[in-house]
Image 1 (cartoon, helix red, strand yellow):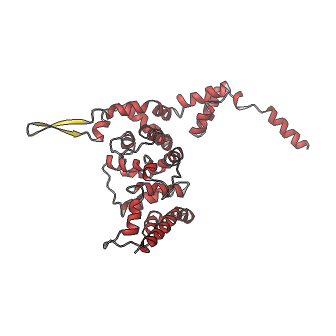
Image 2 (cartoon, rainbow, N blue to C red; image 1 turned 180 degrees about the vertical axis):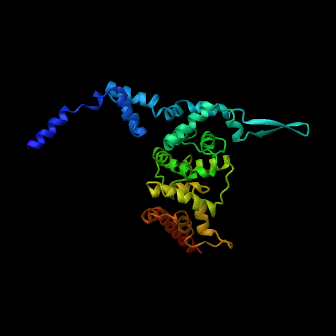
Image 3 (cartoon, rainbow, N blue to C red; image 1 turned 120 degrees about the vertical axis):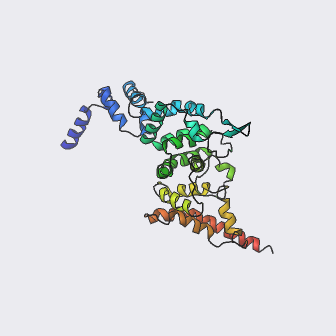
Length: 313
């Protein structure tokens, strides 16, 4: 009991966070995750709130907050005037500007800011930018290689060597965009393609197009993309990301499973085999099993549907 009383007494005497000098408070906040630092900026304590806001606007997190506040106008500014005209056989012929030509309009300061923010917190930065072109109304729009997200990624990750960082950054966006849109984010037959529109899966494609990276959908993409997806905390969400990257949100997988093949005959276990191609080199077999499980359910549903159709004859 004496030891407990001594412990409580020492706790009462220990100064709280608000008792620290503001510079030390700022340093402490800078070691917190960005979400927690932003939460502290809304605290009732005047001193705590001031220290957190300084960490966000002047300290370590300044580049990320600057991108969230000002980068949309900056990038949309260089996206203007989409067409340029070349003189061909005496006539002006319009063509769409390349991403390199568009990014040429960015100042050196903006380039440095974007790269610094991406290096600090790529997931939060990508999540912020995704909402510039993916409003909460969730209207269906086609992925374009010249949207704000792909232009930003083209600057901070100008080659396919950055695939791992881009895929890792997509996890937060995929999970949160799915949650806000009101669906699972996992592979599903119950969710119509339109309901899954504007998920970050199109970020991968638009970035590929912007940097002129070509990956075979049947061979290179499953292995390259799948290897990087092992880092996602929720393998079922990673499975949903893969499902959404296929044309018409996984419908191609279904078509091949039911009526694919050279002679138009269904390919047994096509969905499961294709899913396995993505996680074939994963070291964590528990994660791999959790990744495949949603596809097994879809394969079973497809097989049952095919069986029901065959009984119509």
